[in-house]
Each structure stands twice: as C-alpha cells, then as structure tokens.
Length: 200
Ligand SMILES: Nc1nc2c(c(=O)[nH]1)N(C=O)[C@@H](CNc1ccc(C(=O)N[C@@H](CCC(=O)O)C(=O)O)cc1)CN2
Ligand SMILES: Nc1ncnc2c1ncn2[C@@H]1O[C@H](COP(=O)(O)OP(=O)(O)OP(=O)(O)O)[C@@H](O)[C@H]1O
Image (cartoon, rainbow, N blue to C red; front, side, top):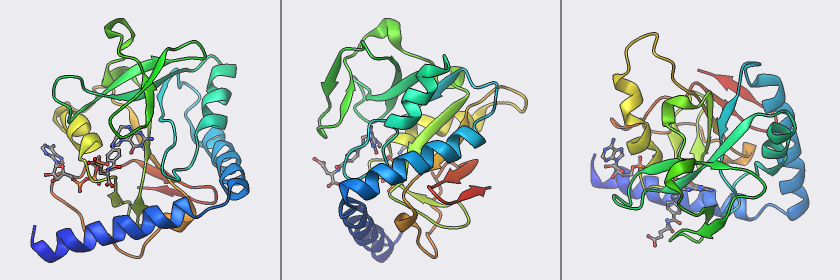
C-alpha cells in the first residue's frame, strides 16, 4: 500500500471518529434503539450465540441489542484483547454477572477467564463496530487490524463448515462514498445501521 493511501485512511478515520463522537446522548440513544429494531428483524431465528462489543469513542451502542438477546436466551460474548499476542481478539462469554476490566484502550471487556472463551466458529453472528463503510461493504476499523487478524482463519474454512455471519454495525454518518479494499480485509455479510441494511 502506498504512503498517500495510508495517510488518507488515517485522516478519514480521524474525521469519522470525530463525527460519531459529536452525536448527542439523545441521538446516540435513538440510534441504538433503531439499530436494535433492525437487528431483531435481521438476525437469523436460529441465533444462539452472538458476539457484540461495548461501545466506546462514539460507537453505536449495542446495549439494547445485548439486553434483547439476554431476554431471549441468546448467549452473548464480547471481544477481549489476546493476553499473549496483544494483536488478536478472543471472544468471552458475557452476562449480567461477568467480572469486567478495562483493556489498554480503556474499553470495558470481560476479565480474562479461560473457561469462558467461546470459539470464533461457535458463534452464529458476530457484530463488528465500524469506523467507516461504503455501499459496497468495504469497511474501515480502528486501525489495529484486530478483527482482520482474528477473522482471517475463516477464509480457510471449507465450504459448508459453519461460520459466523459477519455483521458490521455503524451510525449512518459513518458512510463514505468509496473506501479502498485492502488485501487483508475480510468481507462482511451485511452492514446494518439505524436506517439501512446493506446485504453483500
Ligand atoms: N468497542 C470496541 N471494542 C473493541 C474494539 C473496537 O473497535 N470497539 N476493537 C477493535 O479492534 C478492539 C480494540 N481495538 C482498538 C484499536 C485501536 C484503538 C485506539 O483508540 N487507537 C488509538 C491509538 C491508541 C494507542 O495506540 O495507544 C487511536 O487510534 O487514536 C482502540 C481500540 C477490541 N475491542
Ligand atoms: N491477517 C492479518 N495478518 C497480519 N496483519 C494484519 C492482518 N490483517 C490486518 N493486518 C494489519 O493490521 C493493520 C491495520 O489494518 P487496517 O488499517 O485495515 O485496520 P482496520 O481494518 O481498520 O482494523 P480492525 O480490523 O481492527 O477493525 C495493517 O497494518 C495490517 O498490516
């Protein structure tokens, strides 16, 4: 990748992060409710295990969605930064009594408990926070490559092997006309916002 492209990715990331942080508490709450409504219509009825995240930095909140899952007996997990590599994510079971801690980015995550780790392929759905996206489903994340590295093994699975549905979620204001595709980008199955559902 050439230098200008890295720079434009970084400046785009900065302005999109600013845009979502600028949303009022009221707008955030409405967006989270609308997203929950969209997800409740979209998630496959067989969903038993769903990975989410706890919002930070203006990300669209999944709290209504996680509560909705808990009410229906859908098990949920949250990403935890891998304690050894520091570059991958583990997914750990999350419920109302999970002991929490903060990672190096000050994001809340479950305190490490090896007995609570849920394998990636045991998930039916994985909700990923996006910093930016375009109508073709290209995505921009926080720039750490955490999701890309963690999801890379899914590309090697044989056809027919169960794999989670990859759902990118974002505020509508995070849409941009075009994002460049990077060789390591893992394609999403769908992007859902409070007002859109972009199937890919
Ligand atoms: N809510 C949530 N949880 C998540 C993620 C996420 O995007 N959202 N992640 C998805 O990957 C992982 C954390 N990844 C992150 C990557 C970069 C930064 C970040 O703020 N970077 C700073 C530089 C900070 C530094 O290096 O000290 C920055 O860009 O300003 C935060 C989280 C795991 N948990
Ligand atoms: N499968 C992979 N193996 C090794 N490095 C990777 C892999 N995927 C991405 N990376 C590295 O991660 C860095 C960040 O990538 P990129 O800017 O695309 O992040 P992102 O997609 O915004 O982040 P995230 O995946 O955490 O949402 C890149 O420098 C890239 O080299």
